[in-house]
Length: 248
Image 1 (cartoon, rainbow, N blue to C red):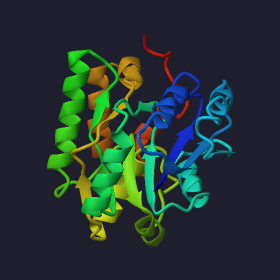
Image 2: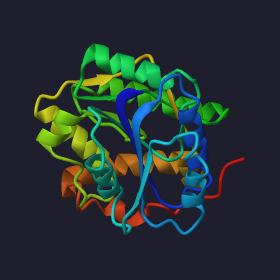
Image 3: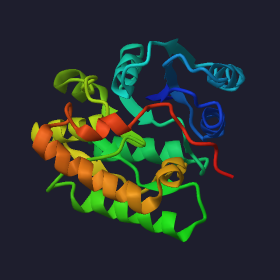
Image 4: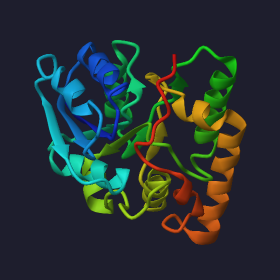
């Protein structure tokens, strides 16, 4: 086992979390800890997780009342001890069996306090691929100018997390960007990895429409500068756990 914990927040993820856990169990290396913090899902998320306990005996499962995804991630860290922390969304999949090994080896080699791997869509639609590639290029190009990251996958070294503070659990949307910017401002080394790839569903793109989603994200960035992260009006339109039907 490698000295790494994977933290996954869930709410009504029965259609997705099993695939993520299966992909973790099939990796060439195994995380020391795997903690799932659920906000009392009303579907069969808990049952899907229980089915994977034999393959992943290191699973720790906790439930707390729904508040923000930030609070769930923070609790996950508190319940673990591994030196290296990897946050993954429940609808991600480690498609390549050596994804975790590549991720871990690169952060060990480069020793960043903060890092992420490029994200790719679980979709064959060229429009989705273009959008994700544009997001990856934007994240890399803006790392030193306007640092940010969507915590589809996000790595943080524990000593950095402990010293600079956790996610702001009062932020409903953009808690990942706020944390990255706060850490970068403090001088933390922030790396965009090259060797590993993380794949994720495109459910939000399909629910909202690609153009509308992009416009919404741009508006959110503008609102942050006007109102701040905690008072971003976009938060009123976002409901964690209110997912569209699983894509075919």
